[in-house]
Image (cartoon, rainbow, N blue to C red; front, side, top):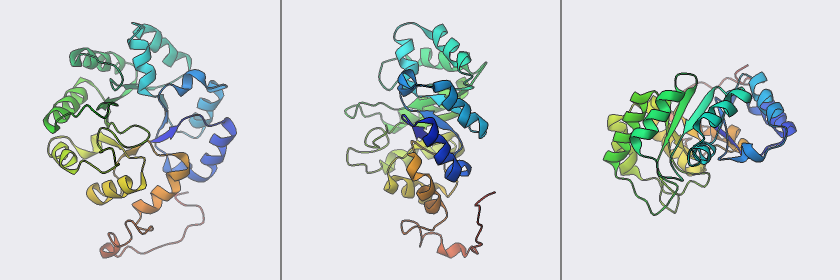
Length: 244
């Protein structure tokens, strides 16, 4: 999942020209979509490339805290957005209510739900992460997102950016890996998850300029994972237009 936090249409086209094949979905970070000019054209540029787009969870929360859930649904329809993020990282939402929003939105949209707080002082114990994630998947979420923010220093990570390894290990005992998108904006975090879960691990909050570097991490073609994949003895075949 690539994070777009204010790219111009021309920048979108430029990044797609080199990294389109490495993007599965794009998040328009937090509420940047609210202040982005030419939003419809930018969304269309992604859709033309076959890449889904969704609004960041903070925008959802901004509508919910003002009791404007129906208005939020109308905004998704207006901009032809088919995916929706449900989160409670900035406001407190009763979990039953959050699951209700997931259930309602999942009738018409593909829902991603985010677990974790943006408050670095709020530490959620592993059993609670597991309980929340499984409940939100049961409510209709397509994927659950492990919170880390754009900076990668809250939620799944310590303030230093170090992974809370015990937390991740416990989550993986009870939640299927393919159902989780781990927000991992930092290179060291990306390499850690690739080593733990394999090259196809779902990673999120990836900056546009980090898409190709991340692909080399997945393939063992960067120092961070070079030795990790050597025992697989995969033959390198050069392709002038990767994955085309």
